[in-house]
Structure formats: C-alpha cells, structure tokens
Image 1 (cartoon, rainbow over the protein chains, first blue to last red):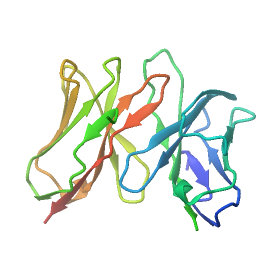
Image 2 (tube, rainbow over the protein chains, first blue to last red):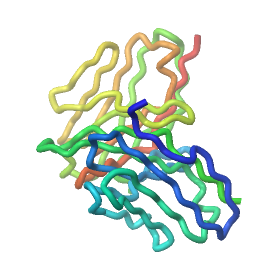
Image 3 (cartoon, one colour):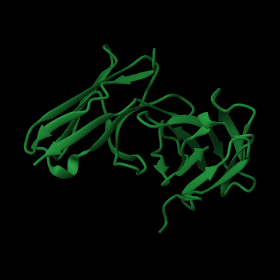
Length: 116
Length: 109
C-alpha cells in the first residue's frame, strides 16, 4: 500500500499522559499536514510542513502540542498532558508541491484518540 | 461565523432521487474549492474540484458562485453507495484546507 499511513490507529490514554502519533506520507510528497476531527465536525487544520520546515501552525495547536518532521519524511505529533477535550481523530495528509495554486491532499486513515 | 458553512442534514432520500447540497464560505480571497466524501470512520477523499464554470463528473455536478460565495453539489440518480458525509472544502491559503461541518446523506432502498 503506497498511501499515507498512520500509527497507531487507535489510542486510549488517561488524562495527563503524553501521547505520540506517527504519520508516513506518500513517498514522493514533500508536504505533510495534520488535521483534527471531532465527532460531527469536519477536519480542522493544525499544522503543515514543507520538507522538514514547519510553515504554519493553527491557533488550535496549543503549547501542549508539538509536531516534527526531522528528515522531511515521516512526522510525529505529540500531545503532552492530555485532556479529555483532546479526544478526536487526528488525520495526516500529504501532497506534492508544484506551481499550482493547490495540490491534492491525500489523507491517511487517522489515529483515533480517546482520553479517559 | 464559521469560515465554511453547510447544512449538517441528515438527508434521507430514496434510491434514484436527486439530492442537492449547498455551502457558503466567508473568505472572498479563497481560490480553490472542493467537495470531499467521507465514509463512516474513514478518511476524507476528494470527490471533485469546483470551478466557476461548473463541472460535471458522471452523476455529480458541482457549481461555484464567487459573487455569492456559494458552492453546490448535485447528485443525480442516487445509489445506495452514495451514502456518506459530504464535506464542502475551501483552500484557506498556504495550502491549508478549511472544511465545513459536513452533510450526512443516507440513500434508502
């Protein structure tokens, strides 16, 4: 399967614990995005990388959240001191970059986080 | 006010019916517009891009009205497999996508 992969697919944690999610983009894609989706809502943008550079962060990304893409390939999203409000689906997407205004983003299956 | 607004539904229609979804967006500087489809507990997938001239892909027709900041999706001759949530999406600048809440559609046999 050459699509975007995410690991783990499900994570249950207790409030106050730290969690880390991993995303592996499509191999030739140099842009990588993180979104969060809560029940009954559309995905909300969190942050995006071009290669290893983090170019934009949403105000939704509080100081408890940190994302990295150290070698411009896979990315990790860490949430420290989780809160019940962090329970959501965390989606990763990737795209190529070109001269187009927009390049299609391909989404991974997501990591579903439940904070007890 | 949300940047992209759409009727959350749910829409329940019989197989073979025509169904229309609408959405509005608030950022007049937006340049790219899309409809995504999301099946239950799955990731969103691009259904079609939306152009000012309107575009059609089989049973699906999308329209964009920039003056009214309004986007529509029409599904003709609906199939059971069309049951899903349809997300109205706008390119919010710097490559980020801004999603509407989604409209849930159920096609009944």
